[in-house]
Amino acid sequence: MTPRTEQQPQMSVEEFEQLERHAPETVWLEFINGKVQVKPVPDGDHSEIIAWLQRLCMQQRPELWLHGERGLKTERYRKGRARADGVLVPEGSLKGHGEWSETDQALMVVEVTSHDSDTNQRDRVEKPDGYAAAGIPVYLLIDRDDCTVTVFTHPEDGRYRQQVNAPFGAPVEIPDPVNITLDTDPLKEFAD
Image 1 (cartoon, rainbow, N blue to C red):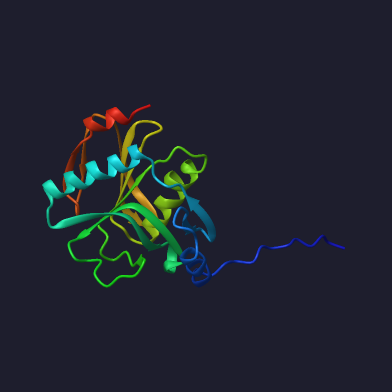
Image 2: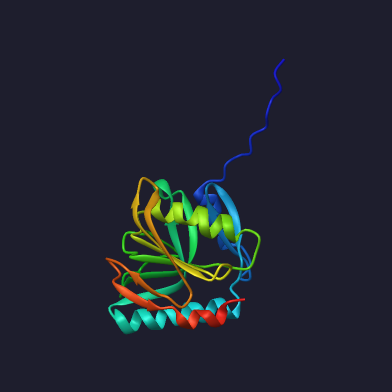
């Protein structure tokens, strides 16, 4: 007799969205790779970094807006739900959208690492794959743990094919379709 293995029932996207709607305001949920995950609420430094990036984007590309904490439909066939720290889209692109937007207008998504045990798997592995599978042209990772900025580009077959990594303080070129340059020197004040 062979042992029977119990399989966990899979949650549907609809079930996740219902769960997320009823979660307390102090809890942010994501649905990545078929698993419900709790996203940490940002600390003050995290919020300051997003505000810094919003200002730079507005200065260099005022027709584009960086929206913070935006829900996106990600992964193959839109089976995932990620709450990006920032989403860069043309002005007005989110009008009429509900809590979870399609990614067709997203030019870039941004994540700033949190100081929690899941940040490696979430921000460095699962989210790049989900964003690439959704066809988002650029993923910008601001990594407070190792004081680097990584630009992922050229999504293909669920993976970004190129990535450029630079330390805090170095200029970072974000290519087409974003076309901005980040002076990352101010990020050095957030290094631990």
